[in-house]
Image (cartoon, rainbow, N blue to C red):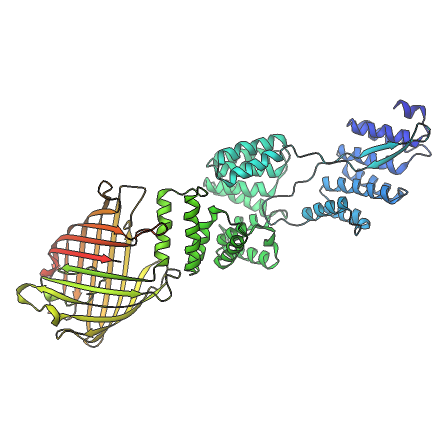
Amino acid sequence: RRGAELEPSNAAQQVQWMGALAAAHRWTDLDATTTQLLGRPGMDAADLLMLRAHARQRLGRGSEAMADYDRALALGFGNNTLEQNARLIAADAALADGQPGRVQTLLKPLQGQAEPAVEARLRQALAAATRSVTPDPVVTPSLVTPKVVCVGSSYTPHCELWPGEMQADPGAASAEAAVRAYGKQSYAEAVTQARSAVDHAPGNVRYQLLYVRALKAGGKPLQALEAANGFLGQGKQEPEMLALRSELHRQLQQLAQAQADADAALADPRLSVVSEIDLRLPRDPERARAVFENAQQAGLLSQMSDTDAGYLAVRVGDDASAAQAFARASDKNELPPKALLDAGYVAGRLGQSDVSVGYFKRAIDAADDGQLTLTPQRLFETRREVADRSRSWGAIASVGYRGISPGGQGAGAAAGIGDSVQTGLELYWRPSGYRDGTYYELYGGGFQTLWSKGGGASGGETAQGMLGARIKPLRSANLVLSAERRVKIGSLSISDWLLRAGYSYTYGTDLRMDASSWNTAQVYAEAGRFIDTRRTYATFEAQLGRSFKLDSVDPRLVVFPHFVLGADHDSKLASGRRTASGAGVGVAVRYWFNEDRYRAPHSYFDVSLQYRARLGGDERGKGVFLRATLSY
């Protein structure tokens, strides 16, 4: 200041003084003094206008500031370097003011010069002007104070304006630590680090969102909602925070508040594509799917990681796109272990059994290596997926006193044979594998009566062969339709066509790793029609009880005491005997075996003993029922 007062006509001295005021953040003094100096003749009006513009922007007078920048640029700066400096300073001001279009206009004369400083600002402007795909808003950079650089001697001083340097982000290190912890599902650590990032950079919206998301992921929705309310209460209605708060309200069953936030976020053009899709899904899934498809066709999803794009596709119900995205991530070795199971289920729903099994095996390896945390039960379920989806053939052998297992080889055997022992064997093959759970099988086998009370028919003369094909047409329901040829072997067997339809429901019939006992239910119903003999039959059996794992003997051994209800119908029997039903109690013992590292036990030997009291119809509905089944 002293130098400027001693040399009032020296423009460099005045600019140096104004630079000192700017460095000291004395914005009001800078505005007033530059205004006075601009009235003097011989002053460097362009530099002074640039400094006054900065002061006025700091004072919240944005439109006046932009006008000063434009006036300064119109006056010119004498050489290309100073011209570039001035345009970069004005561009920094426009970025801080949220005017990306103005940045592009200011820097247009400098394009094509391959200048890193110019290209960096143009990239920032493009990012700010482009709607984001991911819910990570572009953070408006802080306003950078330009530098006044003076050279020369006291006799020939010379001062120039240079762009200021962006200060290091004080919250960056904590934010990066929070992201790493979040990726490892260490949500408590993520919350701590994200809170630190917010404390170091209170105005950074990304850090605020990271903090709220960490709280939400860590199972603290009320604290997350309180934090979101606090950030939104600061006055700036950030659409991504509104979208996140909408999710929190919905999680807490505060549906009216959730919809209000969703509507406000959707009305903001800054809302990301991903957030729009997620907000529309609960009420308008078709429109959400359309937004996804439009973004996909426009190539916008390339801005996301392949893994994130895969999960987005899953949410809108596009398994084909999800599978492609997960495959791309896998090919690049970028698919994280925590996504392997989801990728496997997606491939499974598409019928890509081999691909699905590959993902599940990798998940098992990742769990063994400590890269993926799976509970013992979850690990077992994954091994069960591998076993089921990799099965292409099997064999079932059974023997039973007064009937063999429902749906077994002897289905449709004459119901009136009385007390007898029957045995059967079936081999089946799935030519196309498990697919998506809608598979078909070719099978063959036979059965015969080993013993019959009262000297009834038994032995080789009762041997009955069969060949058939069956299909499970529904993925979500265990409905099986069969067409079967009964082949005459013994003298008392038949040659006929049989059409069968069976439905089963099971709950808790598999092994469990997370419990020593659990509720179990099995229901099987079947109806069939012999074409040539015009005979119709139907069977039904329901079991309800509790399974107990005998860990002290063998963890694969399960005992199942239960209540049972059974019924059957045979149209060829005499009137009054065609239908029989009974109910009672029973106990079954099942031993599971045939497993390896990747596959859960997928074979078992089962013995069941029941006693039923007659409910109605023929006497065959009561008595003792004993069955043994080997499924391999």
